[in-house]
Amino acid sequence: MAYTNPTYGAVQAILKTKYPDGAIPQALYKNFPLLALVKKTTNFDGDFRVVALQNERPQGSSSSFAVAQGVAKSGLNGGGGSYQRFQVYRTRHYGLLRMDGETMKAAVRTSGALVDLWNNETDGISTNELQELEFQLFGDGTGTRGIILSRTATTFSLATPADAVNFQLGMKLDFFAATPTPTTARATSPVTTDAGNGVYVSGINRQTGVITVQGVGGTVDLTAGSIAATDRVTRSGDGPTTAVGTASSGSASGTLAGIQSWITTPAAGDNFWGLNRTADPVRLAGQVLSVSGLPMNEALMEGEARVLVQGVGSPDTILVNPLDLQNLKKALGSDIVYDRVVSNIAGISFKSIQYDGANGPMSIVSDPFCPRNKAFMLQMPSWELSTLGAAPQMLDWDNNDYLRVNDNDQYEVRFGHYGQFLCNNPGANIILTNFGA
Image 1 (tube, rainbow, N blue to C red):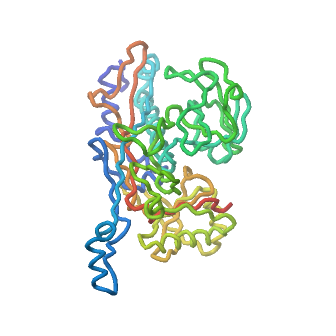
Image 2 (cartoon, rainbow, N blue to C red):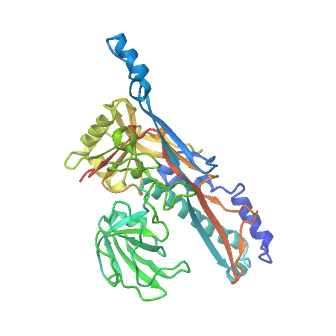
Image 3 (spheres, rainbow, N blue to C red):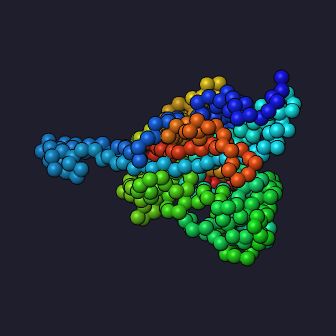
């Protein structure tokens, strides 16, 4: 039986059925391995969360009782172990969709069409926000989707063509100088505004990594300002206004502090969530190792050994780009053993290759959002996506699943998340760069 009128109640009923508790249907996670595999908690309340870790044991030890006692009594750290803490703040992200009244009215003239319409649109924005989370988990907190190799007035080429997966048609863009922590967006033509003006993706060559852009509010010209090769490209609004991990109150700017912000080589004066990690960079920031020139299977052996020698744990999962996995399969030849790794979401698992590690088998999982020529060797229990409520979720605190736009014949549905990505044992993780390069 067809709806005879697109009433408020009819649309509310559809959304209440699809999102009974505001959370995204779990089946949508099947295309996002890292997001599905990582631990997720929904109790990030309060202003911040403290992530505490011990990076050294008590050192009151000696062949001399008097020396051991002296260290335990008056030594550095009072003879006890070394404990550190990260004081972590939430970031936020939003996904909105709008539908005009005429479209809704036309849809209800066919049985089931209104349901299909809302399913298609809500699945679309939900999947977009899940993809956004997956992208951010791999990132460095700056929201960088790609680096410019060259540009013309209406196109730019990506330094890594595979990064084209991070762009979508209709995505609004910002551009940042190639500094370790970009905080000020380049001026663009047309000038970007909150009202919608700016530079948008209008074409994507997903094989060559050439992005075509178009202006809203004026004619686009990427050569008119200071945009240059090596600049970073972000989704508009995602670039941080302060250095990654330096918030001191309220919500942090930019995107989630992803794996590449936790596992890094900290520079002098490092200040990541209130902690200078240079005193013990391996245990507090993990390792980044270039394996250029090494066969891929030997690179994995080298990476695992570099972690094991630290004595703080070992990786259990390896995430790689599908193009790199294909090359790894060729390197392994007949030694491949296939398996499935089960996520913590009911009914969601992923095909994997079993790698025989020194401390037991590790699962090698393909992820299209894993940066090319990098292997992420992770101890999965050390990672946590901690959010205030589900991530993403329908934002319906007033119990209105959709809103009538006050100045237009349109209706709006809002999704989003508030949270942060955490690591309580960075030293058990390593990123291999130039993997297969």
